[in-house]
Amino acid sequence: MKLKGILPFARILLEQALKPGDTAVDATAGNGHDSCYLAKLVGTTGHVYSFDVQEQAIESTRERLRSQELLDRVSLHQTGHEHAVDHIQPAHVSSLKAAIFNLGYLPGGDKQITTQAQTTIKAITRLFEVMPSEAVIVLVIYHGHPEGAVEKDDVLHFVEQLPQDKAHVLRYGFINQKNAPPFIVAIEKR
Ligand code: SAM
Image 1: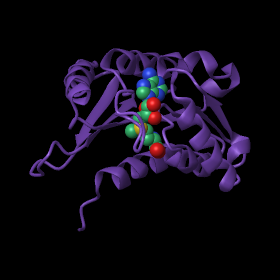
Image 2: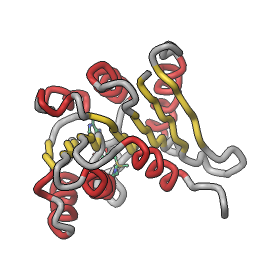
Image 3: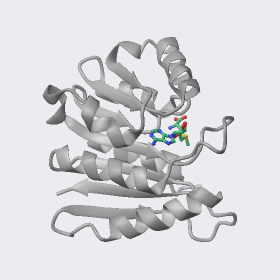
Image 4: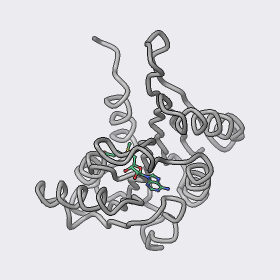
């Protein structure tokens, strides 16, 4: 397939937004795949802040980072991403160029513990406020489960209302696939 799939497209957006020395946020650490990817993009001089509400996810992310010798440039926080901004050092705010939210539940984990519209929107709002111009927030929206369907509607409603002079908002996804395929929403601060 020549068209980029959802996860490769999310990574292209992150690659475009980040350079060595930058700061990034993984808002849903999960099993740590995105944290590792971000840590490689920001390099030894950059920093990644990773958040997850579950101890299992934080430990899984820590182990993945350790095995790839990336742990030294990542701060792990077992707390909701709605509190992310409270944990970012003031000196890192101006270099905060990207955040990724891989919404839903932990693959292989408890399906009852899933991201929720209200806290997702609060986290996006707070990060967007402090991020510099041209920073990007990437949302990967999984809506094939009941909570995800509600979250999708609320998050879409929210991002559609972002003023055009403040943000570019893009939606990317396959529209002829069965079973509620995931899609991307990307927000670039103007
Ligand atoms: N990005 C991950 C990876 O690379 O493996 C996958 C993330 S998984 C789809 C979603 C994660 O969001 C789960 O691990 C879940 O615990 C976490 N989560 C749920 N609510 C959250 C919240 N309010 N703040 C941060 N993480 C949350």
